[in-house]
Length: 459
Ligand code: BES
Ligand code: ZN
Image (cartoon, rainbow, N blue to C red; front, side):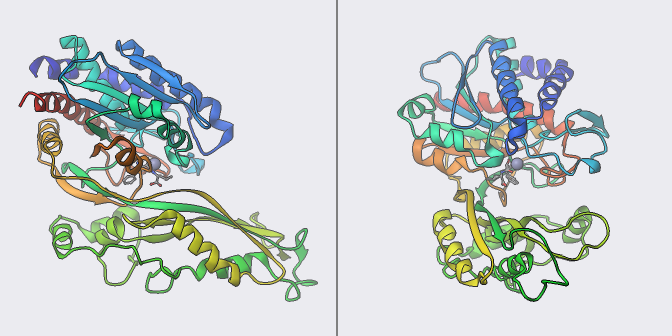
């Protein structure tokens, strides 16, 4: 592997420069105003593959295009499918960024930009590693396929539509799936993630009078949409952190003693965690530790709450309408559709006369647990140790990658979740970053992963 690691070292700046080109494209999938940039990002990724000598194509969908690429067929070698996403979260609030979100900037060994870790930077590690193999050896030790989507952050509608087709089943057929869109356990402690939460996302809209009203003249006599909305939203969770939808916990699989012990054995430092987030205390579901709450218990969150007057100074009105963007994170076996039905049934009777409630379901995905008993996992362990100089620990994470459960169903393949990010990378927040040393360690681990996986078929 010396030839390949030498190549990686000699080309570090080139890889950083290429990633910066992709990071300059503001491919925000949630906002239609940015959709032309999503198309540009898809083109960029496809061109990058072509530049490496892979066959690449854009697959149009009902949403943003998919990029598919594959290497030349090597009979007898395992087929690996790499999934990633070129779309990013909205960069707001813009005034909190030290350097602009779409002008990648290096500071203190980190690369700052929206998408730096989530997921352009992490996805790119698997592109760079393949490039190193192709440039030094002329071929890869595995059959590599890539499927890079552009709507992971906003519901994955395009890939969901595509994966249901017979063509996709054939095209994406593989022995193992590799995804880097998660995190290490901490700095210097790489991890293999074996569980992700799912979730179900909604927007609630409450509409009252046909326009804003003077709250002195009319207040008390008409239903205030924001009061009604606040009460409905607040009733979804109690003061012990328990979600109040009937049946919500029915399908939740309790944590085993073994898993609780394993979580507890990880070096998690609660005061340091609080300091990192800038909070003075932690709350959550009673009876569970912070790692259990974040990784293996379902939750309720409000992402945005709005309506009425938001400008400077006071304004006495009964607003005409209000909205809340909410979600429930779900654990494996909980079904998004069932939770959606329970939400509708729970809120309807709570909606007072004089306002109307709309429950708009945005998207959902079930949680997943991946198989740890496979030679692919051992291969990934060895590759990570070679890339990062440290054996990975096994963790679950609280975030969601909606397509993972669908891949398992449709392609019948396991997924390796190999995260190079860090919890303090500010993903979905201002000042997202990727540690450049981790970027290069990720590329190296990925290069070793192709080698390790390639040897499996020969055993
Ligand atoms: N990279 C994240 C998933 C993730 C986050 C995994 C944290 C592990 C820890 C991914 O890009 C993401 O943000 N997914 C969304 C999906 C949702 C919009 C359906 C999420 O988790 O909110
Ligand atoms: Zn994300």
